[in-house]
Image 1 (tube, one colour):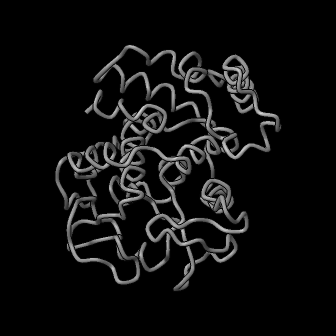
Image 2 (cartoon, rainbow, N blue to C red):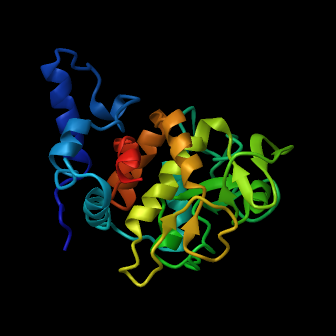
Length: 272
């Protein structure tokens, strides 16, 4: 049974509207017409969704967040296609998605496995813990993103770190033999996705205990690096409107759980 079956989009939007009215700046347009309708009120989240995590740090905070975000609806791998078309929709063109590493806006229907198309990238590489595309970590949309097929292949299952040679097909991204560095605009996004996975999957649901560490070449171990670099990226690239909207769409329409490090980036340093 869900721990918070009542706490979905409408209560959040109502709470956000109430905050606006109290501030004396109520918008004339209905909530659904506002470009910021997916930016939920942090106070409402803290009073409800995150109430059991507030005031905690370290292992205690991580445990509390694990309990909170484990209450989710799970998708099949085929359902991920449709979910990504909503979560990563181009705000300037509703017919397109924005690809993670290239930033390219591409037709939602141009997905598949051919060169030039977009496919589903496991930001926490599925071989790190050997979960494949199994329902659970293999289908968790919080770390699945649309990416160019060739760039996805180049990244492969490499850990994340700074350095390497720039990709000609994706300027701003770098890679070498054991690591991948995404473009600056999504460095924080990548870090927060990795850390979400480390909190959500703790080894108590038939999957491996996923944890970040401070090395590369992790292979098939349920580890992902480098933690020191990921923490730096999270701090230097805080959540933007696109990332916040994505978190809300996943919560409201699909999995009904959140990435806490988007709502509270400071929790990265509180745990690690």
